[in-house]
Image: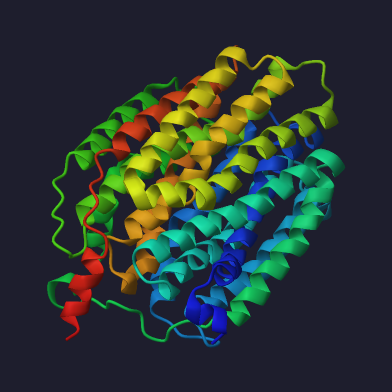
Length: 483
């Protein structure tokens, strides 16, 4: 074992963050380049771009949960998470290289429609990312003790990942998105392979539950665990089936029905009674799912449909200039998000606890969304608003991991990480399949920022319903169970 791993020093936490950084960088490349490629190079419409984006969350629904469950219970190549990180990194790098060649792939296969090829490549990329995404985060829980060190691990994860995310958008802004894709493929490969081979994983996970807490996983238990997300999970296959069947003009009745159902299930989760007795806090975990899903609904709307806003607000820009404005916007968002987790959020979390800090960050992010909606009529004001939003974005991708991992069994962290990711991918699907049709029929594309601001404000209020136990309470209870 490396000496810095024994000490859990900051350099080790940064090394531990690199595999997650690799997957995050691949996502940054996807966010920066995918909509731009689909719109400017392949001429897809806004609702068609949404279908391409839907491929990724579809890949993540089963992939994240299954990989989490499997990685909790295997030992291959000297690690529990190592094989998934290594294979996922290699495949992700290869799929990134396929993005600029979608047209050539379609021609080689003799396919006339570019949409089907784009969906296939996007799904293959996301399957590859999903293979390593869960394990790169679970390994942080595996090798850090519950409490401040684990919170530090996840905040340093986002600081390192966010810093390289800034680099991604800088490369895209200066040299263009094609250069970014090739640069990203090399970085993903290096950051996945080297740290995975250096970090030593524990053969036995700490705090293995016994008795009632060790209830075996079943389909029913898994479904109850994800209850706040049921409406999203049912809507996605129905909406996708209608689109594939060519039924695109069914009105918005489907979205209204499932929107009401989603709000009811989220409200039910947020009003559940938590029992903070040192055992697994399943009610608290469901509250985290509900609150996190709301914020990701707003973020995915921004990621997918901001291209429509930029094209409408700045019609004088050509395709390359539009790509640069998009890259600079996400650069501003991620530059702030890279700095705040370790330098601001971690110290504040030690004083005020993670939930309060997270809720406050989301409230500030809502102000950033509102600023762009009202005043984002120049690239400069757009960048200011996006930088303000970075305060909340840095929290979204760091603090929830620290919050929920302290209330569940570390022996099943892969499972919980996979289910937690459903609070990301299911709202992503709803956005890709439903919001695109709504925005395509609305003249004012700036409404994507109004929607995002409303989501962040609602999420901030939802997070205040999550109760945290005393620090180290679960660790003490689990330790007592091992005597």
